[in-house]
Image 1 (cartoon, rainbow, N blue to C red):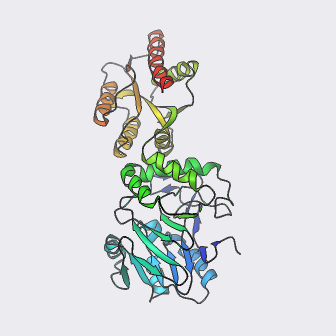
Image 2 (image 1 turned 120 degrees about the vertical axis):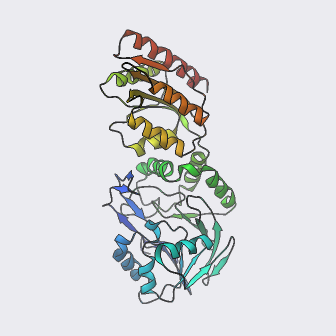
Image 3 (image 1 turned 60 degrees about the vertical axis):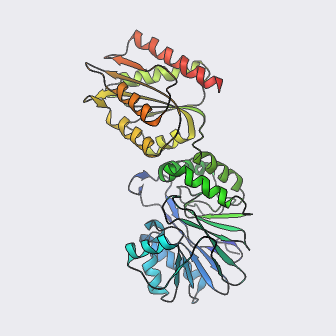
Length: 396
């Protein structure tokens, strides 16, 4: 059996992208990304999702390698985002009799994106297609993370084709399944993918997990990252925790600094926390940090300290950028503290207080507002803030 035949009759025909540097034009791809697509080959053939059209020729070759001259009878569209749907028009030209399967919202988007209105089959919650020995059953999962999202369940093979759910950044280096790949970097790439792409939609993810929780799943075929088999309990647990916004014990210190004074305050707070036994501590200078890594760590850990100088009577722009991203993701709670600096008129601390009020986060420490340079008074203020944070941290 070829490595791309995941289990008998189900084949991987996706592609790797090690060229694109920004996913959605926003999020860095240090390990690349995969666009996963799958064939279920039986008396009839179903293709599950497509790939980014820039890789369409490789994709078509992968399909031909499995099918030869056979046709694709059904194209199942779990998700209409173009990285998974932009090859649909090409496939329709290659397989003109192919039925495109999706729910009502999918078919509306199919017309809107690609002008395709015929040769389609609308399915609803629980609808089933029989391919022969394999059947495909459809479950709607709206807002995970688009409104048309659904998943496809093959009960005979115990395979869940999960769309973007359980996906990760990172190209697949040789292998396809979690037992064939080195997984160390994929765990943080899954957190980063979730935080940046899915993060706002925790409640819909929880509903989907509850809906699918009774299925005897042995393989998860997501549209990005490894095919999960051995590590399914860890993957589902991670998604459950992330979608409940439950952070692990740890402190993220994210700060902006123009001339180093706010940075000195951040460094002193970190040192004081470490002396009080707080672990782990992760620091991000927002001037140079990869914002996707910062957002990932905000989701990963339960305590967030933010520092900002006053800039044009507002927050430092990169600090403002981070807080807007957190707010957009509707993170319901974090242990939160903040500190700032100013030269002649302070505003940063006030703006961060307003952020906490909008988020309904109760700060766990008295904010520090440093005027002009870092000095002995700043040491004392940093120590007091760290004592308050450590007290909360160690009591949890």
